[in-house]
Length: 257
Image (cartoon, rainbow, N blue to C red; front, top):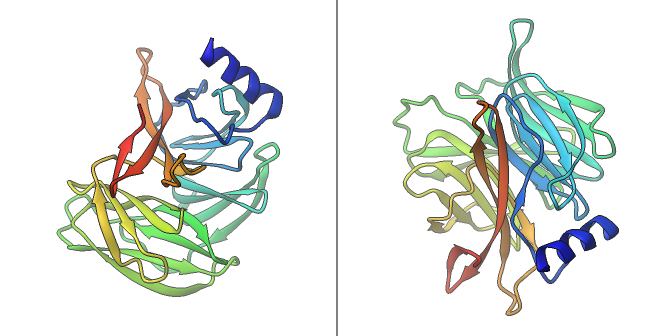
């Protein structure tokens, strides 16, 4: 009954209740797995390898479109979805920020990133008037640090920030939530919680946000909370994803029960 009432409330209001967050399964499927996701308070935007999907907070598909691989992490800002893209089609290669309207996911612009990224890009977020984009690394790279690039809203580069850590493929996802940057990686440290401004490491967390996270309303005691994504490979060989809430308890990010 609780789940039914929750779903009914979301369908009626179009938004996530501030007092609760229930696990969600995206009802779309794609040929490639989830790369990142974000929300605008009313809808969730799931960036999969070859599909961009908009759902409500029950996972019901509202809009979707096919996209060129490889679409990476995404963030929502000012009514648009910004996606960090390493285009790998035969017709087109390069690093771009693809922009889509939140309304119906129609293309709403594109920015070409003109300096080389050996390992592509993946993570992206918006904070305090700037976009932050995570640089990828080759799988076998032994580089003991990662780069996060700071851009103006027109994607003019203004800074390059070093984040220490041995990762595979670099920074996969970034979200700015509750006054911190949260970086998802493929590494034994999993999630990096970093201070605003200089990305100084606060701590690592075992909860894995490498395929996406976004801010949820704070917990009853003012604790930071995140919605954290997980990939699901279906029996038909296609992919979808789920999401569930996590909360910062005693300095550790843990999944809510």
